[in-house]
Amino acid sequence: MKPAPFQYHRVSSLPEATTLMASLDNVRILAGGQSLMPMMNMRYVMVDHLIDLNDATDLAGIRVDGHSITIGAMTRQRDILESFDVAQRAPVIVEALRQVGHIQTRNRGTIGGSLSHLDPAAELPGLMTLHDAMVTFSKEGDQRTVAMDEFAMGYMTPCTEPDEILTEISFNSWPVGHGFDFREFAQRHGDFAIVGVGTLLTLNSDNRIDRIAAVLIGIDYKPVRIKEIEEALTGQIASEELFREAGESVRKLNMMEDALIPESYRKQLASVLLRRSLISASKRATRG
Amino acid sequence: MTDGDMHEVSLTVNGVQYDETVESRWSLADFLRHKLRLTGTHLGCEHGVCGACTVLLNGRSVRGCLTLAVQANEKSVETVEGLAPTETELNVLQQAFWENHGLQCGFCTPGILMTLTEFLRDNPDPSETEVREALSGNICRCTGYQGIVAAAMDAAEKLRNSGQ
Ligand code: FES
Ligand code: FES
Image 1 (cartoon, rainbow over the protein chains, first blue to last red):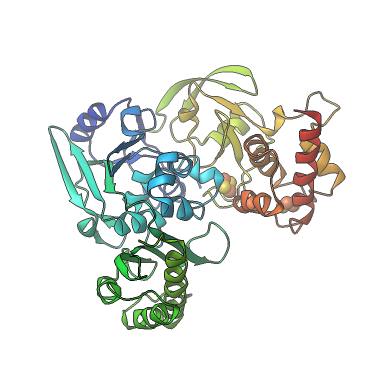
Image 2: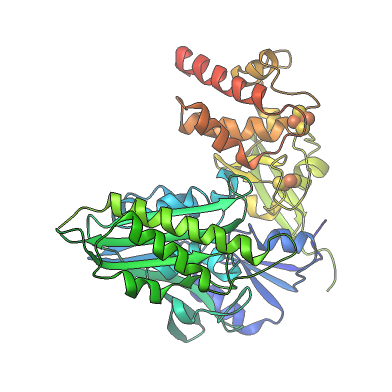
């Protein structure tokens, strides 16, 4: 349970990191280390070079500009959880982050690390998908931005090129008074979710749904936005019956199956969690 | 790859300054145990699940098995050895564990004490539910947690009353 030998490089800025990336082979980025270090300890991952971004202060922090929120890749989960700006503008993120790992892992774990690791049950990729976020990558002399929709290429595989570093993620906050909810089912607090659901919605004065977004995690290799159900709900009057139907219709999706959890169980969880999440979000929304 | 990618580190552990040379692949927990001979920090799983290795890095609790020793350069580390005020006395939290049967074999205890040290600094008046949530990252195979939770609540109250 010890990592194989590697060369360690500490960098203090993004330009330093991208220059190094361009010059080295078999290199990995060390962000918070809460997923990479276990894999290195178990020697699932063996690298020649490790570039540690923990001193790259230009990659950490939360910026707000009008409706837009930008979170640096090296911002720790705990700092997002305790951010006043995030709590004000995207409270669903705070609700979900409380269920991400434990104090000790949130103290180290970063948003860039969670996105790059891309566990199918991870909350942060789901939350970013819920907010239609944009992800920015940098490499030496170049930069590009990708929509969260196109971020995942396959199971635990983001579209990051070998010489690129994920630098930040940004999204627009929903209007003040929007309803939100995040809930998941896991075997114990902080453990991987079997299924999780995040919802956002706005209601007008006669209780009709103006705008809605819903995401499921843990059912496929990447977070799934249920666009058809979102469309069907838009313009409808919010009611428990409506949300029960929405919960039932999610069973039509194909879901993952693994050695422990059959597909039918995931469908049952998704159905119940979606219904409860929509009810809770609509109760929290300000009408009008 | 040759082994022996060595780095100089300079850090404090429980207030004591150390200047040492470490191999890049050493975990902070192994460094504390094998190099500094501070064996109070335990290693259970070495992949971030059990919490036995919890230490404070610049005041925040971290998994010692998922942090590299080289990453502690120019940082302060607190371990279970730094809690007791003297060789013969326990601090308030440790005393509460003693009085409330907060441990049996004691393997998980150093990690739990460090987790609670940070938690009670941040949240001096927690509910029992908050204590249980804070302990979710520490596994204890002996106690069933009742004594640990009781000890945390007892320590919180005593710390509040003493104004510490
Ligand atoms: S030894 Fe570090 S979490 Fe188990
Ligand atoms: S007291 Fe034995 S593991 Fe907790």
